[in-house]
Length: 293
Image 1: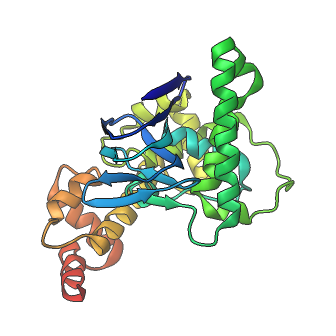
Image 2 (image 1 turned 180 degrees about the vertical axis):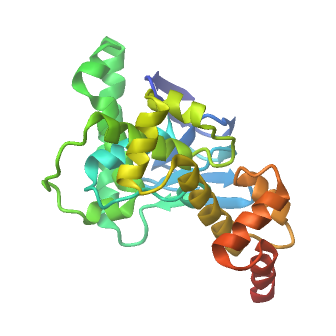
């Protein structure tokens, strides 16, 4: 078996050629994109199984997964930081674009790329693999070259276009005013919140993440969003909770579990917030889901 690996500031890349191999990864820090080059590889994550073929990609959630091959096969894996992916998407999209609510909504399950007939995505996958080849060659010469030529950012941009189909619908070359420093920090903190709705998010943590004063942070929220940071966090948590309740299997999920996954330690507080937001209880939504299944 032949393996070539590269590590940058925020990427973990490995290209492997071999036969009769089995890989098992349990990485809670990175999400992974797998690209097939040749042969047939079986990808298993949770209870999902799919076939990874030549010039196809599979996006994996941040959890354990394994890859099996019983014949001569080759593939490339890219471990990446989801917040970096969102940042790249923002550089490509006009101001009207907003990222998905939470990582669960677009990175929380196995996603095969390209979809049937998506030729643009297929071409992007080919160009991404070409960039990886160039990145590996540069690393062999000098690691510092990666920053100077910007290949790491180019790779994130390509992956953003592969993952977020709607980005490819925008015309490039649009103009927008350059956001000021406070607005740039706001974009960053909104993405940080979306990826951390399951944990405590005190103002002090948001200040540290945005590297600004509490007053500046609250002013930016009021100016751009029309509410305080804590009000926006609650709104996002309620939207996430509703999505989870509507899509969860009632036999395997409880309201308490969903509340905890949305950052609530107190079930009664979750119940009160949900009822005041939607006019019904979380149990009502879970019951409807059970009846409709």
